[in-house]
Length: 89
Image 1 (cartoon, rainbow, N blue to C red):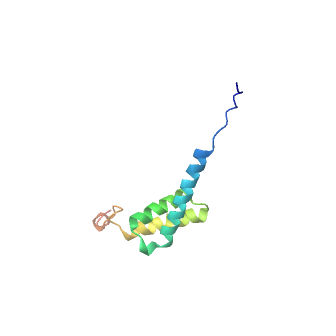
Image 2: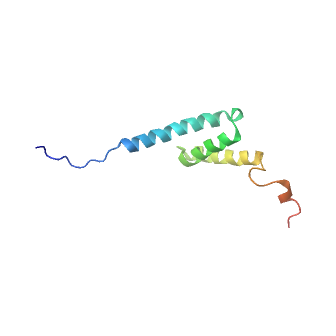
Image 3: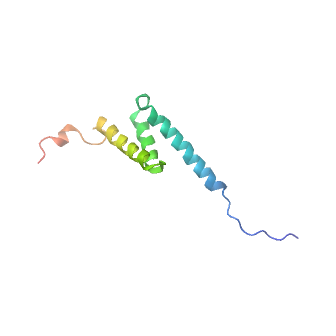
């Protein structure tokens, strides 16, 4: 007979999740680094990842600002067309 070992928390799921987040951050940084070569949709996804999981406050803030710029480039997608702005009190 063997003596049962005390319960130990396994770190594999936590490490796998962190590895997954690190990989997504790396991909997001690559996409944001080549803004001209990627679609607005992919840029939005990358910026959202960086806003939520960026390492520094500066990185998170820059991603948030880029989201604002992308939305300004495509006003119809954001639901702000010219007819909404004209003749409003």
